[in-house]
Length: 141
Image 1 (tube, rainbow, N blue to C red):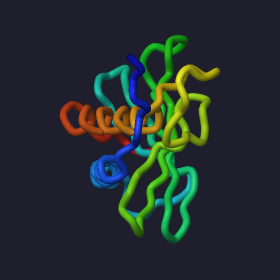
Image 2 (cartoon, rainbow, N blue to C red):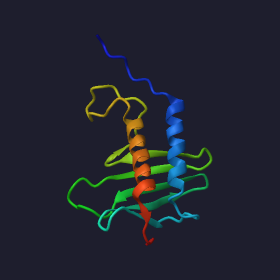
Image 3 (spheres, helix red, strand yellow):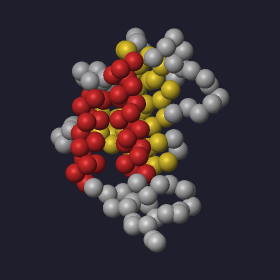
Image 4 (spheres, helix red, strand yellow):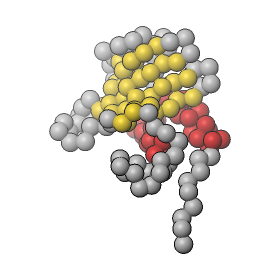
C-alpha cells in the first residue's frame, strides 16, 4: 500500500508562525538595532544569544545560537525572519540549510522530511516554550 503524499495545511502553518512571532517578540528589545544582542540563560553554562541581523520597516531578521554550553558538540543555530505587518515569524535558516520549500519529495538527496519547513518551525516553538518556562534574560552586550 502506497503512503499518501504530504499536503501542507496552510492555516495550521500560519497559526504556528503567529504563535512563534508572539513568543519571540517578547524576547526582543523594544527598539531593534542591527548588531544588538539579547542573552537567554538557562544555566550558568548554557545560554542562547539572539542577535539582530537586519532591520527593515516591516521585517526583522534575527539569529539564534547557543553561545555557552558544550563547545565542540552540536551547536544549534538558526535565523528567523519576523514579518511585523503580518505578525509572523518563520525560520529561514537552520544549521547550514537555507530556503526551505513547503514539501520535499521523499526520499531526496538531503534526506529532508516531506514537512521539513513545518518541523523546523515546530523546533522554534519548542525552543520558545523552553525559554518561557526555564530561561531568563541575562545582561545584553
